[in-house]
Amino acid sequence: MCGIIGYVGRRAAGPILLEGLQRLEYRGYDSAGIAVVDRDGAIEVLKRRGKLAQLTNSIGVMPNGGSGIGHTRWATHGEPSDRNAHPHTSSAGEVVVVQNGIVENHRELRERLAQAGVRCESDTDTEVIPQLIALALQRGLDFSAALRETLDQINGANAVVAVWRREPERIYAARRGSAGGIVIGFGEDEMFVASDLAALLPHTTQVHHLEDGDIAVVGVDGVSVSSRGEPPRQPQPTEVGLDPVAVAKGSYRHFMLKEIHEQPRALSDTIRGRARLSPPTVLADELTISDDLLRAISRVLIIGMGTSLHAAMIGRWWIEQLGGVAADFDNAAEFRYREPLLGPGVLVVSITQSGETIDTLGAMREAEQRWQSPQLTICNVPGSEATRIAEHVIHLRCGPEIGVASTKTFTASLAALYLLACRIGRARGRLSEAELADRLDALLTAPSLTERGLSAGDACATVAERLRGAANLLVLGRGIEYPLAMETALKCKEISYMHAEGYAAGEMKHGPIALLDDSFPVVALAPRGPLFDKMLSAVQQVRARGAPVIAIGDEGDAELAELANHFIGVPPAPPLLSPFSLSPVVQLLAYHLAAARGLDIDQPRNLAKTVTVE
Ligand code: F6R
Image 1: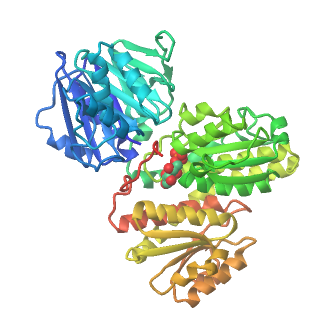
Image 2: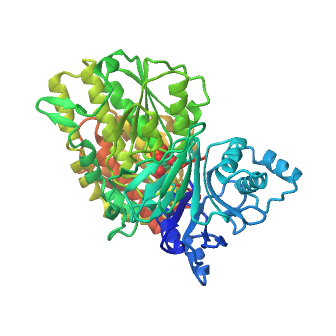
Image 3: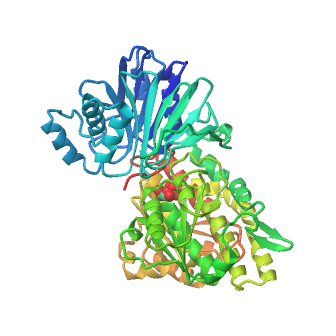
C-alpha cells in the first residue's frame, strides 16, 4: 500500500521523485521521504510525517544528484513520524532503502542485529533491511548478493528498492511475494522504478514488471534482472496503453466525483464488444475459459475484499439465476485460512480492481496450489499480479481509478460478473438463445441507467446536508439490493467517517431495531421488485420507532415517497439490474456527506488504495 518511486538518469532526481510521489498519493499514506544520491555517492535523505506538501515545503535547497528513491508510507510498525518515515538507512548511512510490505520476523532480526552490535534507530520493521544489507556488504558480498541474502532472512511478502553510496548510478529493486508489484520504466538515458504505473506515465509507457524472486540492477542505460539460480538477463520493455491524461482530475473537485461520473463510460467500455445481440453471443472472442469447463463445474466461488466483496455478493445472484449453477461468495482473507473444500470442479472468480490486494492474491494461490481450481479474475490493472496468477481474465476498462474509495471499478466489476453469468447460463443451457439476447439487451441499458442515476446528485447533496450531524446510519436492502446496502454503509464509513451499517432488511427486527430512535437515520434501498412489499413493511417498522427514513426508490413511486421523510428517485431498472441505477446514487450520497463534513475525500484517513499487507 505504500508508494515507491526510483530514478536514475541525466536529470536532477529530486523533483522527479517528488512528482512521482505526488502521483502515488492516491494510494494513501501518512509520511513521505526521498533519498538523492550525487555523483560522488553522497546521499541526502529528506523525510517528513504528514502530507507530501509538508515534505516539499521543508526542502530549502533541493539536493543535487542524478539518482534516488522516494516513498509514501502508511504506518504499520511504529507511529507515523519523521523518524519512522522511509527511506531508512544503515547505521553508517551507506545503504538506503524503501520498502513495501511487512518484515514479519523483524523482532528476531533486530535481536540478531543487536548481537552483531547494530542498533536500529526507528520503530519500523523496514530498518532491519538496510542494516542487514550493510552487514553482508562488510563481509565482502556484492550488493545484489547482499540484498538476496537479506531477503532470504526475511519472512513476508516485500518489495524493496535500495541505493548504495559506492554505486551512485545504480538502483537495486527486488520483489518477494506479492506485496505490490515493482515496475521498471524505460526512458531515454534514464530509468525509473515504481510501485505502480501511475507514477511512471508522464515519463514512459515502456515497462517491465518484476516477478517474485527477481532482483533488478537499474542503471542509466538499462536493467539487468536476475532470478534465483539463473544468470542475469536484460528484459525487453513492453508498451502499456494507459492514457496519462486520464489520470488528471479535470474540472471535478475530487477524483471520486470524477470517477462516479465516469461510470457510464467505464460501463460502456467494459461491455463493448462483449455482448452481441445478433447472433446472441457473450464474451465470445476473448474469454479463454471453454464452454466444456463451464458445463463441468459444480460450483462458482467468488472472492474479494471490501467493495470487491460486495460486487461478489451481487455476482452470486446473477450466477445462480442466469448461470444456473450453485454460487457462493467469500471474504478472501477468511477463505485463505479456512478448509474451503474446493477442487477442479469449482470455478474460483476473484474480483480485485488493483490486482494487488494481498488477501485476494493469497486466496487465489491457495485455490490454485492446493485445490487446482480453475480461476478467473476480474481486474482493472493490466499486468497486475492477479492477472498473472489467474489463467482467465476479464479486464475492466475503467482507466486509472485514483480516489481511494472504489466507484467505477465497482460498477464495471458488476458488468463483468453479469456478462460471465450470461456466458455460464448459455453454456449450461440455462439461457436459450432468445433469453440470452434479452438479458444482454437489458445489460446494454446499464450505462444509461447509471447516467440517469447521476442526476440524483442535487437530491443527494440536500439529504447529505440534513444527515451531516448524525452519528450513525443504518442502510437497509433486500435481495440484490442487500449487498448494495453494505456497499453504501462502507462508502459512508470510508469517506465521511460516519458509523454506518448495511443490513438485510429482514434481519433488522432481529437486533438492530433496538438502536432506532429519532436520532438514528435509516436509508432504505427500495426500488420496485419482487421484495418491494417486504421493504415497505421494514420502512413502516422503522418509522414506527421514530427514525427518519431516506428512501431511494423508483422515480414517481408515490407510495414510498409518502412513507419516507426524504425520497430520492432513480430510473426503474429491468429485473436484476437495479445495482446499476442505485450505485451512483448511494456513492453520491456518501460523497456529499463527506463534502458536507469538509473531509479529505480522495485520501481518507487510515486508508490505502492498494492493500498489500495483511
Ligand atoms: C472501498 C475500497 C476497498 C477495496 C478493497 C479491495 O472503496 O476501495 O474496500 O475494494 O481494498 O481492493 P481491490 O479491489 O483492489 O482488491
